Length: 160
Image (cartoon, rainbow, N blue to C red; front, top):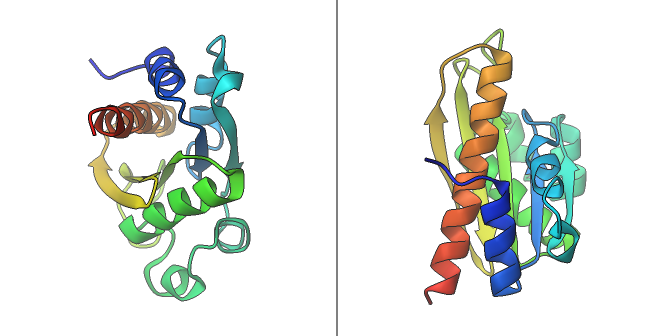
C-alpha cells in the first residue's frame, strides 16, 4: 500500500525536513493532503500551483526553451519544478507533479501520462507513471504517487 500523507508528515517531522510542492495537474491536491495532517505546519513550507507554462517558468524557474521544445509534460520539467519549489519555499525537500489528466492528450502525451519530480538537498530526479481512469482518478493516483515518492526520498535521507 502506498504511504499516505500522515506517514510523510511523520517522517518529515522525525527528520526535521521542511517540505514544499509544485503542482500542475493535481492543482494543490498534494499540498492539501499534507496540510490535512495535524502538525503539518511544523514541516510544510508551502507550494506552487503552476498550471500554466508561464507560471512554471516565472515562479519555479523551469527553462523556457525546455517548455517550448518539449512541453510541460516532461521528466525534466518535473525535476525542474521540484527544484524550483524547493528554492521558492526554502524547503529541504520538494515534490512536483505534471501530466495529462484528460480528457484529451496534451503536448503529444497520452491521457494518464504523469511525471513526479523530486528534490532533496542537492539531489533531484523524476519518474514517469501511466495511470488509467477518468480525470478525477488520474489526479488522485498522481497525488498518491507523489506522496509515495515523498516518503521514499525521506526514507533515503534518514538512512544516510
